[in-house]
Length: 62
Length: 538
Image (spheres, each protein chain N blue to C red):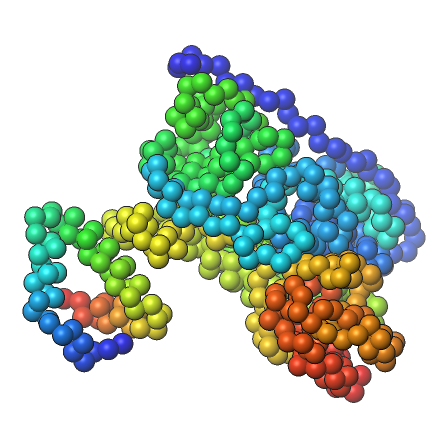
């Protein structure tokens, strides 16, 4: 799992991510994020990296 | 058709029954001893009996009933997988299964009205047998019984209830109750094939780790005249079943199995009433399709897995050893495969060609297969019955993307169809063992070659007939082995990815014991010694 910066335009990505949630209810937003996770997971593909990402996301909770 | 519709039922199946015949053990002064005694004439028990009889082993099957099927004609298993069909080809009942059953290879998964995933299992097949044939379980048991009755060293004893088993170091003493009185017999090897509720297992105090699922389903087996595709159709969330899952599959005699996921709080008695089941069908079929019920039955599923499939001279096969959720046809087929794995091992041990430790490989291989099947079916169960709002959300994401994105279709899990499980590395097969399909070989097939005695096959790719005959002369006197020359670049080579000149050692259950780079006799003998649990100096 990469933890060093890999997104060339962090602010641009964040802006687009936020914009994707514009006008959505909380439930619709959560649905969108779930779909986004699936699409991104397929870009990664490698099981070890996916499992590391799941663990890191859960560890960073709260 | 309205609320006053009258629901028709097909006449009940007339199943065969076989008479109780007083065995020679009744009233005999001395207890008789048999090489193998099997308790339970279900799929696993009958398959093992048929397999052993063809190998010349005198086998006795004890069954407390006198017919086939469970609770009359209610069908349990319906899908028989390629590896099972290949075994039945060797046992001599495949043609009957093919004629009576429904051959299929395509499956489709729907969400609402949209197809979101499909597969065609034929694309991956090298076998003479199709990926699947659907058939009511009682027909298969019926064919097995009739086949066993043709074979000399096997006897099925009906109305013969096992009431007590004494498990000893050199076999078991089995007490049997019959309409003509009680008797006891001895078994060198005793096989428990009495199913999920095995008392034999429970009385031994063995831990089976049972768990019960809350998901509830209701089967309607129905006959109607509608041009449905002969395919496996599943809905994750059917509009005609209040957004819950539905299965649709054709069996013999134009009977469709329609299996509906119910609200888990539903009352099983009320959801299986004809008027309630009929209303569900009307919702699915529309007002004009005529149909008649064959059977209606609610169920919940459960699973268990025994820690050890062998305890001394007692061996557990089929549901007595393992039960999984009924997704992907991994129940009955694995009982059948247990027996396919065990039969040749018992035969070779009894005939003195293998060490007794070979029987431990049955546990090693089939327990591993059961663990895998439990994992696969549990994943399907979880996909079909999300336990929280968050899980529903994740599944919604899969379904939404599957409509337009190829990759997400592979996550829609309405059952992963049974395949011949690969076995993990072991003392008997250091590289593990994978299944060899029933490939056609220059005028014969793998299964036909394996039907001749209880022998390994040595398939030598690209050898001449003379070379193969010479190697056979060298080895076949000392080993249960028959060497054959096969094409260097035929279906077998493609199926196994085997190079010209290589030598494939195939076990009697059509698993690859070793794939050798060349036909060096030393290496072949070493592989045989390992595969047969014989010491290095044997």
